[in-house]
Image (cartoon, rainbow, N blue to C red; front, side):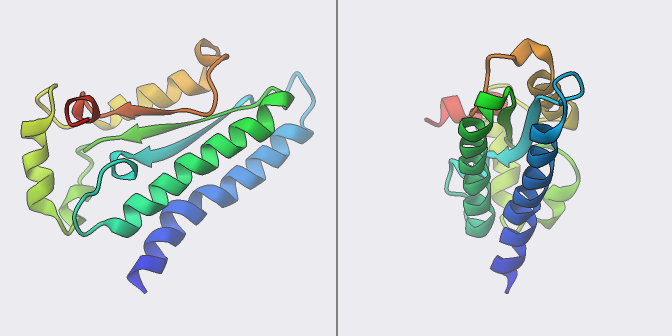
Length: 151
């Protein structure tokens, strides 16, 4: 079904690489070890967006997986975090079934615009860098203040 495909892409597509890379990181020697897993989530994990329940549920599962990875891997010096993007102008918005809701979202975003791919990438770079060495198990909203405003 369509729901199965959405969950397969958005949750299983995160679980499998997390398992592979997490195992490789644990097995790597200290000097070569990559110390960060950065998953991609979405504002949909925290908000009930119409007609995308499977997507939101899958992204909520990604955030729970991220917390679990953080707890399991932190004793080995490996961090796990997620970037939770708001509406990001990637061209994929054309495929969302609730296009009108997405178009109205910019009006409810304190920053007054949709995100850009670089906004999300910057947060991912932060999580991958040593600047976040003491941060693990969190999902950072990158949404122009949307989640704060609508809380």
